[in-house]
Length: 154
Image (tube, rainbow, N blue to C red; front, top):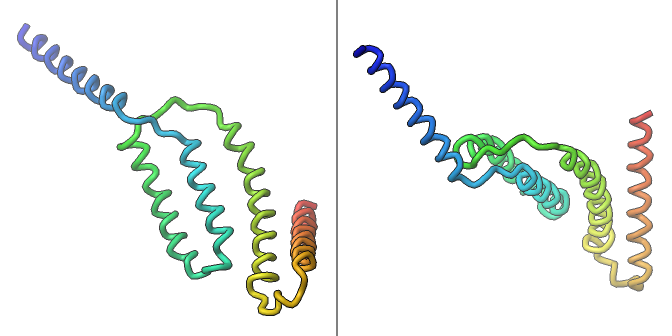
């Protein structure tokens, strides 16, 4: 009888511990994968746009992003509440569109920097001609990128 009573006390303690762990999980803020993906996309956009302005800034930024990604697991397991698995169709659908848009924006931005910012004689030309040259060179660069991408797919 005494062994059975001891066993039920241990079961009660185990259940109490499991209940406390469950209540701690509920009290935490939920882990939001879409918010984390948005943050990663914003950092990628930041790097794509500012790489030509300060190329040496890429190394510390890359190191910071690698550390951040490594600590996401700690954030998921110990800081935030784990949510129920959901559909990942939104993440996959937006990723390709986002990558294409970043390539287009970065190409236009980089050609603008090359033609306008880094050109000491840009003031000698009328502004509409500079804008036309910028857009034409960006279209040429995008056409070359598109041809290279379609050549890789073939």
